[in-house]
Image 1 (tube, rainbow over the protein chains, first blue to last red):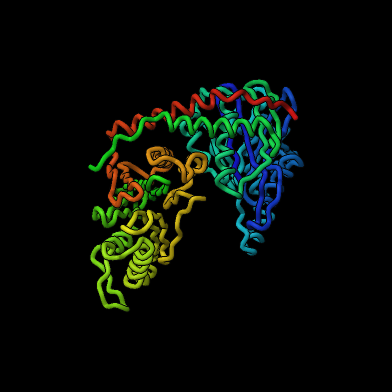
Image 2: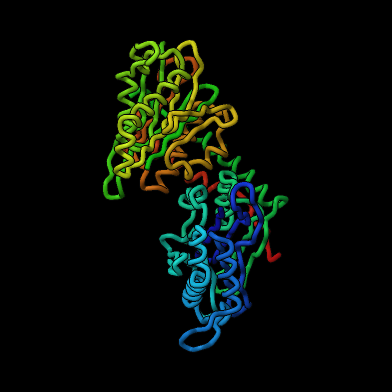
Length: 247
Length: 247
């Protein structure tokens, strides 16, 4: 399992991903799922992946090594494309290319071709954008109405986002809320685990702002968890007792 | 979809259930899923149901109408059994009886025989207990380590319970937390909806304490939702800003 969340607010973008992979409860490992593609001043792009690890690693390799554009004959990479929309299309093409090579054989072995990616960032001259790319290579984009996108085990961490995140939320607040959402998921699902990778990209900076791995000894994350739990206890205690009786 | 939760704490039991049933998004209805079986001083039992409505309604009818005990030849009902453990076994037998009558035909029509029940309450002379009964008729019991059980769409409402509920939580607090858990689920999943039925049973009272239906106009529930959202906003704002930079 996996949990990744991207939050796009007025001031920038937050991307958070766990690192646990598993093929059964008895086969757990740590793999980075949050990947940065950056050239300061030109582009700052983050991709978070969920699904089959062999598929997502192949896709990431294609994004860097490039795919030949059938029309122009040129090799395109995630660093050469001129806009985030073109990058989203390119990620979709890379997924379809991996399907072309491995998809049928995987299905013959009853392995599902299962991959989902969050793609966020900004290319100079364009807007900061956040997409979710599906295993068919098609994609959707986050908007002001729904400023966050999730992949993997999304349910445990959704209520806090639904209650507190809007496109007007500050970047630090969005990061804190994303961390609470991740913490809720880690507490409830063994398939999602530490360390957690986070990154932020400020709008129009065309550079990665924060890029950090939170491990088990991270003092800030431990404090955030403790403060959050204490605040929730105080919050429900402050609500008046239910006035209900027998109807 | 459905969401029901039972919380067993030192002072008593909370049971909460939504009322939405659906056969597809375009076929939504309201049915009570929380059912009380009470005879003050003798027993106070609550059952919440999830899964196929035809199955759960048949089971509930059998619980009241009774099933012949193959050994004694007597008709047993939920009102005649001498302990909560015997009631849990009886609910399991009722589920298996419905499977015996309808299971094969349902499978022929590609309808899955799918039912889960929360069974909580106390029979005079015994302890207040909370069980989850599966579609095979077998069951588990809540303990001090895990004082709550959920059926249906359980993921959205689990984090708040994991963070805040222990067996030492007060009964009013448990009810408030159960309502927050239900609210989180309703906000995130259209398959779970108002009105919401709640009941509480105080330990050793052998009587239902609260039995109430929360509808859309319920002022207390609206206030709880608003206070909770406001408290969460204040909580994340009170957490210091992340100190992270580029590793």
